[in-house]
Length: 506
Image: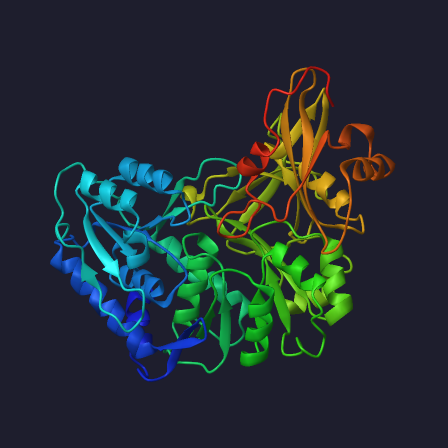
């Protein structure tokens, strides 16, 4: 098995003066990154953290937080992600329930009184990352050692407890074992030519864009894979059209990952084909992307928009390569790509559990030798699968809305509403109704400068969809509530509409 711990540390020392991570237009060198990693290593030893002790990491997108991830992964410690975007009390309650023996956070987060208090309450040793890459890692006065008892103990061979995004409900932590982490890193290589995990580490001059939140799976894998590959990394706090365009121009990016909402924002901008000419592909995941959006990107810039499918539990399951997209998109329009060879996939009838013929919609089940002991695991996704293992995600079982006996899917309704010329993005959720059980409700983001009323959009919807598909309510918002990974947050969107609707209102 490849020693990826050793590979990370070797990569950090190849050329200490070379640029490693650009953040807010300041480069952190590989040497600076390595010194921060060493400082974190030393701080963990100073607080008495055992080699297998879990470390709660409050992760933001900065070079110092990247060093924190690299320190924990390269030293084979157990990384437990903590979300800095939670409100103070929510974060405190998460830590109170988890009880990690060590917590590492930035000076910015340690200024949150609730975080300090709960750390003291659970007896955690506290390590502070500086606000700037050239400052030292330090211990918090009075919290320099682990106290108390009954701290969280990781399961054997778990390297990372990764927090899910909480798109559909309360977030949970998924254990990622060391073999699974290695398998995932190997799987990422399927998108790169002439690169293998066991080749000697080297540094590249090419730059990769990193803007997914590192507290979630896409951001964490992006960082580790980028470092393992020796890429220079342009790191953003989150997607921003202006910063994206600057990064493409400044670094002549060849491939860039952009969330679906970001793709829509980019299409609304005045970005030209010449401006984006260095790009040979845009990758997009974390949420469904409309085939019309993919076609619009191809028509305007002639850039393949490569979607993928995965989750915290399964990591990467399916995706498009550039060559396959060019060859198969017209005949497999709307697919999220081909299922990777390290997974088996099937579509079943949700009632009987029987496997359905190719091309039939049902519930997706997955199986992999390194996940769930090779057992079939039922997802919450509705899907279709063809004979060549191309996969279509058509909806979610947990966002299926039973409206008085008629089942409708929020994703399908949203895709229809997004065909309106004034609508940029829609998220449709089910809300309670005393007579019908549940009805669809739509949170709508309009295009810049557009003006539209609920009555006007409702009238348009009645002309373009079945009566029971028409949302009972519309809410116009400047942007959808989102997770740090830019997915629409269904729980927060449902809260926009309240509950306990009057009987018969639909």
